Length: 326
Image (cartoon, rainbow, N blue to C red; front, top):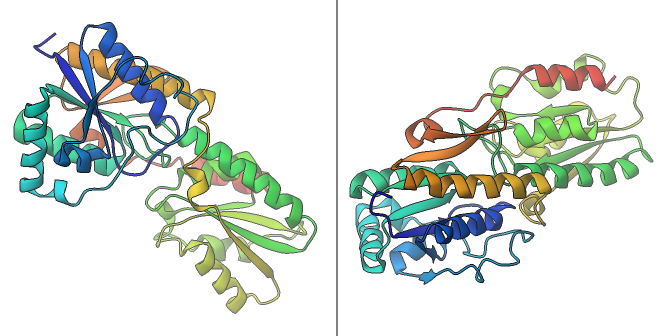
C-alpha cells in the first residue's frame, strides 16, 4: 500500500453536483481498505488554515443525493504562493496525511500538481466541474446535471418564446469552453449555440442572420456561452438591437442555478466510480494523475496532460444544430 495510512480529501474551486458522491466514495473506499480519511474544509484555504476533520462512514451517509459539497469550497490566492503551500504541507505533516485527493477543475488540479511536485506528495485528481473542459476524460462530475438544468430552463423559456415573435438569448456557463452551450442547444432544440472555441474565427451570429435565420420561425432561442469571446447574451442582444432593430430581443442569464440541484443518476454513478478509482490509484502507487473516463472505462491521466491540453469541441455538432433548426 506504499505506506499510505491516511488520505486527505478536499473540494476546490467552483462546486459541481456530484462532489458529495465522490467524497462518499473516496471515504468509504479508504475505510474499506483500512486507511483513515480526513476531510479538509474549504479547499486549499482550509488546508493552509488547518481545518481538517476525520471522516467516518457515518459522516458521509445520506450525502450522495445532495448538491454542493459537504467539505465546502473556496478559492485560495495564498495557495498560489510558496509560503502558502509550505503552510499546507505543514498541515499535512501535522495531521499525518500521506496522500491527497483533490476534486475540482483545471485550477484546482493545477494547484495539486505543483504542490505534489514540490513536497513529493502522492496526489490524485477527480474532475469536478460543470464545464466538462478537462482533457483526458469524456465527462466531468456535474456536467450532466448542469446540462439537464439548462434543458429544463430552456423548455420553460420556449413556452413564452412561442407566444411572441422574439429572439431569446440564454446565457449559460462556459467562460473558456462551450460544451454546455453546444450540447444544451442540441438537447433543447435551440436554433443556435454561440461558443468561445470559434468566436475568434467567425462571426457566428452574423452568419446566422445573413443565411436566413428565423425565416421559418416565429421565435428563436440561442444559447450563448458566458465568455468574453462570445460577447455574452447581453452583448449579443445589444448588437441585434443596434444592427437589426426589427427583431424583438430578450435575455435570460441562467447563472449559478447551473451549479446547484440534486445530481443526476449519471453524475452519481460517475462520481462514485471515480472516487473508488482515486483511492485504488494511490494504493497502486500512482501519483500526480487524474481519474478520467473514456468509452465508459476508467483511465488515469497524468495531471500535466489533463491541465496542459485543451479538450476539443466536435465542430460537427454545430452543423447538426444548423440542420435540425430549419
